[in-house]
Image 1 (cartoon, rainbow, N blue to C red):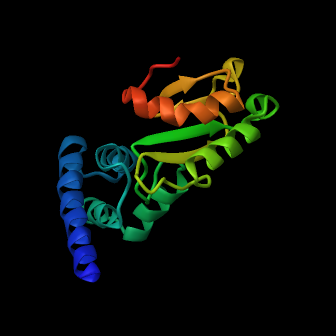
Image 2: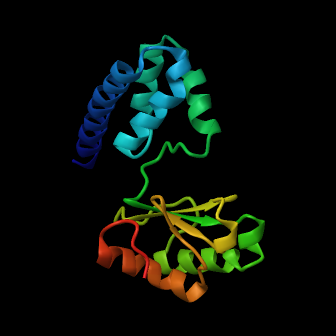
Amino acid sequence: MAVEQAIQETKLVADEAVRVVDDAVANLGASADQLIAILQQVQRTMGYLPRAALRRIAEALDMPFMQVFQVATFYKAFSLEPRGRRVISVCTGTACHVRQSPLILEALERKLGIEVGQTTDDGEFTLLKVGCLGACALGPVIDVNGAVFGQMTVAKAEKLPDQLLKEDHRGTQK
């Protein structure tokens, strides 16, 4: 039964990927010059880039699958695995690093029960480590789906996931 369910889920993802890619290509054009824009649109819609989407993009743009795959794996902004509803990115650039961002990252790993690059079992959170978010004056900084939380401390970081779940909307910092 579990195998049949997995096959059905894979087919649903593949069907959705075809629809989403076809929409992106219709909006942006079937040109290799649009590859990154198409990947971005598909990821925005699906939350990640499933292999079925990469195959459909390769077909639509008349490109080798491996070329599409290489672009999708080269840029860290793209994910081939589903991400959580909230993606928590901890800045580890120099300014944040010297202000204890590694300790903040460790605190979030403990709080969420996952390691960097993983997603919680409930699909709520994905934890990422990024080189720089460009908000050095606010460091240490955490970005959650585009909302920047500055002057972060270990204590604030440990409270953040619960705060996000309670607020259930982006961009509010308390």
